[in-house]
Structures are given as structure tokens and as C-alpha cells.
Length: 84
Image (cartoon, rainbow, N blue to C red; front, top):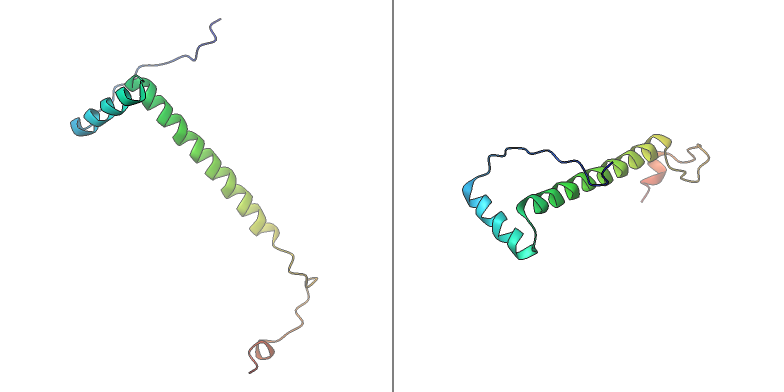
């Protein structure tokens, strides 16, 4: 069994100006276009994963609510908060 990641060829339609820039970047980075694009796609997947985890944490915090130190009791009125 091989330890290398299994790959699959895909066909992409990329605008020529973008393709030209990607080729230049790949050369500058010392990578193949395939390697560069794979790296970029993995970074995209990682960013989305981190974002989704952060979103889930924030939703859980909102659902749990925050302890404002009131013990659930409101001890003021709107008028008392706005007294001048």
C-alpha cells in the first residue's frame, strides 16, 4: 500500500490571463502549477474549517448566554437607567 496521497486529474477552464500569472507564481515558488493549486486549495479548506469551528463556538456561546452577574434578576427599570 502506497503512503502517497491518491490523486485524480481534473480539467479546469481558467482565463488565459489568470493562467499566465499562476504559471509565473508557480515558477517563483519553485512548484508545479498542480502543486501550487493543491496548496492553495488546502489552505482554503483549512480556513473554512477554522471559520466553521469558530462559528460553532460563537453560536454555542450565544445559545448558552453570558453570565452578567445578575443571577437572572433584573433590579433596575428603564427609567432608572436613563435618569439624569
